[in-house]
Image (cartoon, rainbow, N blue to C red; front, top):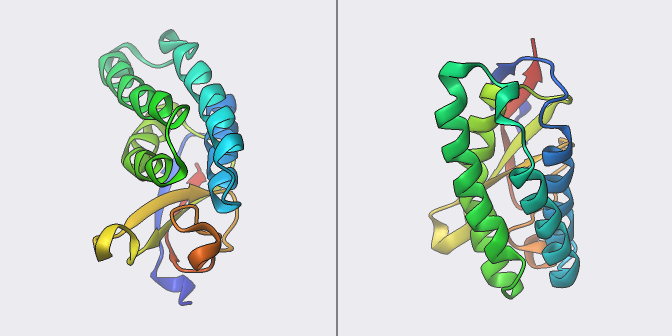
Length: 157
């Protein structure tokens, strides 16, 4: 695919959201592998890292927004712990904008790639973040493993 089409988003280099990113990526990888049980476990870890996130680590003016984002993501993570894989994928797709908004505030400890599949959800599309440019689609798993393109690169200032 055409890599030049991807836009860039610069965030601060920071460890603040490291465990949260780790757990998000664990959910993504479980969904890529069509593994409902592992996705549920990873979602539980994600929920824990969202709950234990120290809002005081972000500047005061961003704390209210950060709490709202964490709260929205927590609802989806909690749902992913107890639903079937089709529903897990639906909730996972819902948190893409939230995690990007969070990283814009907290910064990131690694380069991430926002990837997009136009066919998800009856062709309305869905996106996710990955630590690799290689497309491994969590919204379809083995059904359409390589469907998608890199839309944006999130890198550190």
